[in-house]
Image (cartoon, rainbow, N blue to C red):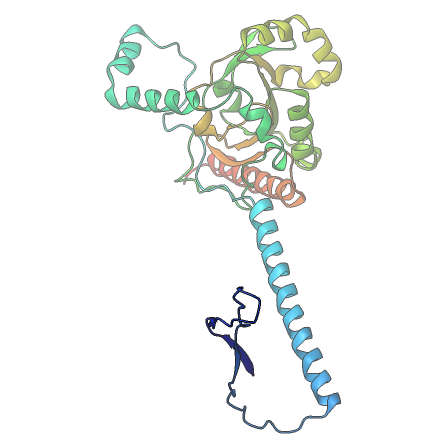
Length: 325
């Protein structure tokens, strides 16, 4: 390698005859040769082998990139579309009753520090949610927040279905779920909109078609409208509801405006726009639950669990009828 090196110019005045000007010499340029260390000699490689090695490296690199992309995509899809199974028993701990609370019971609840803290935490949680939070949640999985279990909730772990009152379609009389569910195996559908009605119908079609003739089976629908204006509109148009509901089910269809604010989380009813289905045994305990659009395995699980409860109920009834010796 040749590196040019320029030195400072030198001046030497030269006087010519008849001239008093000073001429400047051109700068002297000096070249320095620098030799780089030689690389070690590589073994000769044919053109074909070199091309093959290069193509193999490219294929391996692309394969790793594709595998990484596919793995990341599958993991992302799984995280985006997977829903958890129901992790806890649903319901309330206290045995339901249709009796109206006395002033002493109401005062005791107001003075209970633990209950007041629970209500306060619930209000703080609700205050942080937007007005359209439930509606926006329907964009993900159609509002479905958990997957129904394949088996029933254990009898010793099951909690109670709360008492809900409402007017029936047959004669507009007041009815309570505690009276309706006691002594029978019940499938209860919670309705709040047209889409929830469709979802619950898809859930119970298979089970209701098979066990509707069983004497210990019943299907209860609760049209729950907590908003005062919506409740008033629904009560005004009950004649339209009667046209869409078979007459034999009018006595088990309740129109209710009961406030469920503080027990929604206990029942897993986290979205007001989707439907919920509960399988309740003869002691008013929730043994199975589902929400929103059903999957085929969820509808089948409801059918199987209903069959198990009906068989157990029939056996217990037979044992009670057998006289003791």
